[in-house]
Length: 293
Image (cartoon, rainbow, N blue to C red; front, side, top):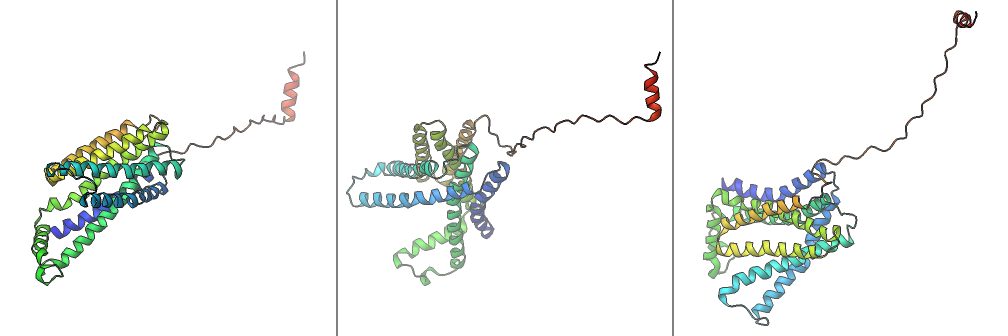
């Protein structure tokens, strides 16, 4: 059973964003290019995000920056990680809107853009989960002592392998559930940043940064305090709030119905006067008789 659910989890993580893109492309008549732009935006944001987090970690570890007390480490880390994610990803979204996809200013296009951003993240994580699954399939039943693992880490490695293959089947699908929730969030964030252009107000970019920071910070804190199930429940609440935000920011003239291209204006065909029918000799005589006295 676990072979199936572990594999299904990885497959869903990679397939769900593609299905979302297909749905949006067909239902809203959107181009796939926006999905690709969203994917490139996420990757570009991580070029800054990952080194930034690594640099901050090194600064705190080297005591160049003052570290918080032990009691405050988890909330401090949650806030810092949330802010760095919000700043890097939402500013990247804003810059792409401004300089790359200047014509994408509709709510529908924002959905496709956000699907690509969150979608490539899900695909990358799904690929990593699939790689882990394949590795642990080969490692199952293998003696840890025979692996190239330092002696002081063999006990930990054996514990991790045992936990992987003894988890409840429903727990193995949590990765796919989390990615579904995350996709909802990324759609809402893309719509939020779009408002900075539709309403000509950069405060909407600030709102998107804070929204992203709040979601990530609460998730990190919950994972450290409440465990995986409560964390996913909280992320699910954020996903529902994201859907509500998406619908609240939908302009009245845009719907989820398939976009229909209006028919071109065709000038009316001019009416041609009908030609009189030729009269027969008998009809001419009858007509002439009406005027005789």
